[in-house]
Length: 157
Image 1 (tube, rainbow, N blue to C red):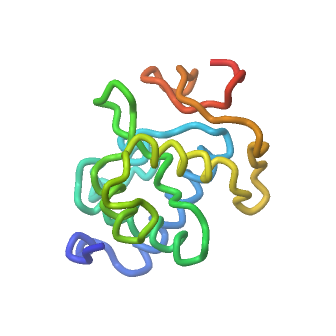
Image 2: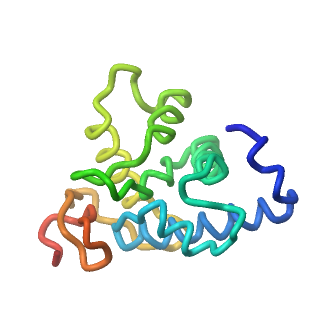
């Protein structure tokens, strides 16, 4: 990921933003819910970081790069766009997944994202309960977001 967008942040501030964002995403994964890019922006509440900015892309990308390097799923799979009929991550997520070798270059984006989202939700993030392996995660309406959110099959929508 690029470092030019981090120019407005000290190394300490950037590390704090990553830690805070990572914790927010892990919480969403533990509930098997996605969050919109705007939700991440609202949670962070830093006027220098906008949900449509390259800095947000870098922040989420670095989080997923670090998770991947440590053998964990791409945590930013829980962050999706709210302007599509089926909420999926933005193009930066898929570019990074291809760059890391997690997604084949000719892979179907939705199929890959759903599988990665399930991996994120099932992963034990430091004591966060994981979804049972036999439980399928699908996209249904959610009480957390009016646009819909991936939830376990049979879970209240």
